[in-house]
Image (cartoon, rainbow, N blue to C red; front, top):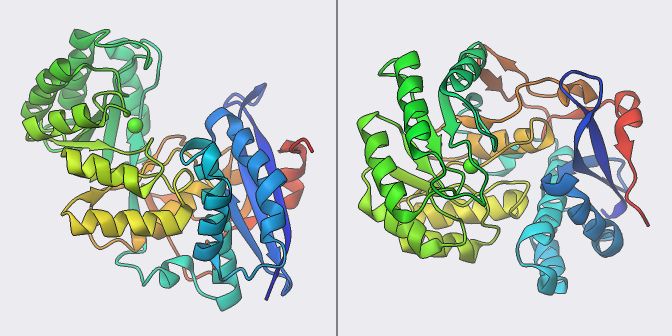
Length: 372
Ligand code: CA
């Protein structure tokens, strides 16, 4: 069994109105000599071009003729080959895409869904949570309208964000608190909520806001301070009762270990950013050893989301719903087969691999080549 073809490319998305374009994703197809194909996806940051370029120029040739079942060995080999341009960021995203594609391929070869290869599923019906907000100022009313719109999709939890850019700090604490209170009032006392500060608070403001969120019954408080201030993140976590989560910008197991040692009790690695299935399995073991939860980060609604569903299905304590950032169907139209949401729930079946089938005809006009 040998890999014969590594095809990495970008996909350019039409905007939600269908008139212009809005961002790119970096996708990967790996084929073997038995005719099977695995699909992967890299971090979408800056269109995923940096990760895709690393794969095209450096890793593709390391994969040709390799055994597709050697995913973990191949990942370590490629990681150490290129470690000086990492270990974080674009390098990690490239490795993640390859690992996801190799697990998909392994599932196709063995004719089993990925969740079976991960050790089995605790659940194959998975609720989602609506991830709302962004990096521009919004009024309380605007946030409430967004929440109302997302409630139509029947999420099991809603996460709102502080609407500040990460170069700002404590920009509108009163406004953020007003939004947290208004959303709680809108959805009622029992509906699960989470709050994401998008790294925009000081330690003091984080603690004050965290105490308010505790009173409002929010489930977790995400990334209150800058992600690179690991000790400060841990200080906030230790001083609050509400669970502080972090790790969506942590791309190594060692980085996650540092967050846990600092006091963070929910880690949020992202399967398209950190090691794919191989990386998230290691993260899960690390978290389990320390009594921490894993609530994976995920913004990509097709390949990345499907990989995340298989991972969460296999988690012992996967109590949190799966993140859904983009509820539009613009990516889903490129697949003839993909797990879809019905009544807010994703259903995984027993299709081999990730259970995805790309529609080449629909993909062709959106495909963008990686420069040689
Ligand atoms: Ca976040």
